[in-house]
Length: 226
Image (cartoon, rainbow, N blue to C red; front, side):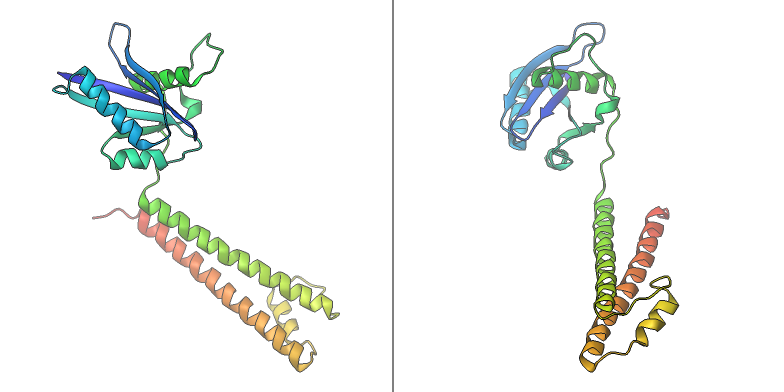
């Protein structure tokens, strides 16, 4: 016998509430369990195994789990799919609502999620691919360099002000950079400024290279594979 089961999961950092439902066309949906377990993916897998054993281990099952987007992010999704269990993350604002129900409980939320899964009354959250995550990390790294460039600019500005050098025009233009090279400084102060400027040049070049490489990454990602 082929059976379709939807498992709504109301997930929190302290507990998971699981509701197993079998949608039945033209009749009331069958709810086989609505229980609370410790917040561990292994407990969900155990719940599924126990459910199969209870309903009939010889049957064939199409099982899908789902939970609202929230504090767990994609972590539970990744663990379940890695274990071979279908899972979706529901966008909360797209989910069907229960009319007349004012008291919000974990058990009711789990039932609602199971119903949304059963009748498709939701939109799934986009799950980033490994490539998406890699690009995101690359952007974080690029932004770290941009922050480092901003910091060294602030350090150079502060250095100039401490020693009475004020530039009236627009800063970090070609004219400003030429002005910095004309400052009359003692050997030690000149060496200090030189080090700051070396850092500025390095971070400026790095930021430009990283921006170019990011464009190339996006270009390669959007180019269809042959």
